[in-house]
Image 1 (cartoon, rainbow, N blue to C red):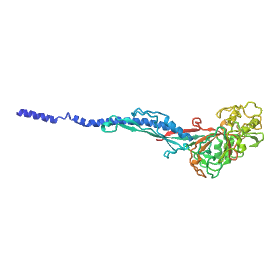
Image 2 (image 1 turned 45 degrees about the horizontal axis):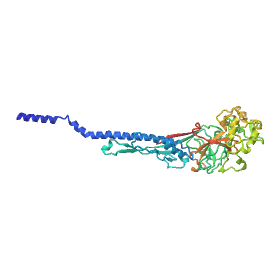
Image 3 (image 1 turned 45 degrees about the vertical axis):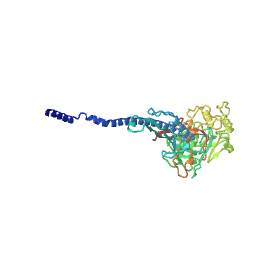
Length: 471
């Protein structure tokens, strides 16, 4: 009996000391936690991947929309269309079987990064896009009492930075403000600065200060206007140079017509050669080292639009705009400069044939980038179409390219700003326009023919739109 009791007691003591099965208890307690952690990792990982795909969609849509924000009247419409239709992304981790056509909600446009929403396309510089919400089924989280689905959406903000390099520092307050500035190719403009402390409004014409300058002086103004490609860039805005400086404006622009100031005005102007064709309705003569240009009844410049001779051109501010019809005196120009020629340029006298077309035809090229052949230069008249003053003053027979008679104007919706006296806020041009000088400037008045608007995709070396994500 004692032996049996001792054996049983020994067995109980061994069982009490045996811990090999304790891990089962720990595992039993830890198993639900482990399942929860794995489930949370899987479900949150799927949700994070879904959000990443939606963010990629939002980023791409915002960048596509921002590329259309060029300040034109259709900018918001085009940006909205591009943002909403660029991609039809169906995230692979979305399990809601989304069948809609809309993946991007209605974009929001602002003038500044943190500004209030705007509807004016000329002031829309930033776009914010948000994707529709998409759902992902939770596989294991519902075991822990979580929802059966999780949803997510993405948001992105992008903006367009405008960079204009090597442009003439001139500006025009949009005569059509708040409507778009959209003249026809060939329309003639009379651009004239008003000077003084005038309030800048539609039709006001003036100068721009290059970056880093305020109220640039006469010498700098002359040199910048004499240059075809001034060495600076406007980045996302321009600053008006207030006040009147008609003398330097005339002197700077007119070197393009081979009209260099006499005396010691600014010797640096001789570093800017004239255009290859300087027909201007004036006859050259020389006295000593000085160049003289005088009117002659038989010397004819390219005609102005007919309405300038009848006084019927529409006027906004100090700006007059023609309609591109210069047929009334076209033959007068032809007879004075091409007498005896029987072959006229294609389209001559027809609607749409411009003075710029005539200029290019005379040089024997199709656009301003070509190398002049002088195939059809004016001849037989009293005026020599080739430069003479530059050679006399500099000793060089060099001439510039055909683009020497082209200049640029920043078109600004001035009603959005207050510009008076020395108050020159940073302003973003709605457009940059390209003009052709038809005759020398006089008393700050510039007669020029509209060619076209600068476009980033065409004028890459001059105008660029840099698009970037901000959020």
